[in-house]
Length: 113
Length: 114
Image (cartoon, rainbow over all chains, first blue to last red; front, side):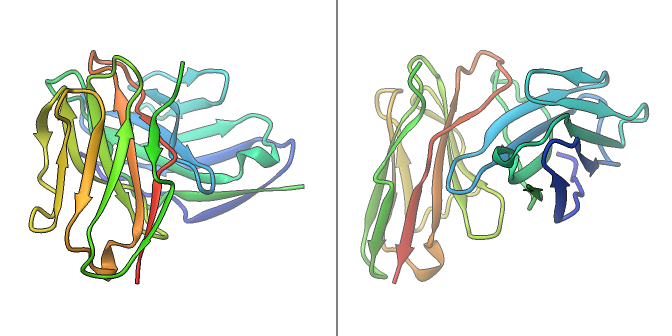
């Protein structure tokens, strides 16, 4: 799987948009970009994923550049509960109908009141 | 829908002792994963099961770690004997195995080896 690069930490004011960048310059054409987050003392939680197109769900938006070498996760109105470590992961599906996640160190997002 | 259950939540043992962790995945989920998360790092996959068969155990330290999923439902991860460097959170995750895109994680078991 392709490797990702994320800043180790970021701050965001409560109520503002949090924009978390991720570089994945070696991504292959069949690999997806996934985002998970891990709130302190909890297991990781799926946020969103995409292949080429931008994606939006009730939690966040994912913007993938046209060359697919980088992406940005956007939390539109950050709250204190969004304080967590955010992981950007590049994933290739296995033939068994499942896939493996290779986590890096992620970005520690601190939402400040 | 009940989530992934893990027990115990915390465990403290001395080095060279043995320990076992239990995981009950979401009902109907065929694929089960065990991860190890050392403090300050992201989770690392140890083993992946599809039903009761092992798909990948390439990162499992087999000299001391073992895992089983006998009936294709719940699973046990064992460490024998434990070393200081095994201190970590052990996470279990599951998916349906039918191509869905989300792994559901349990709360983890925090192991401290003294």
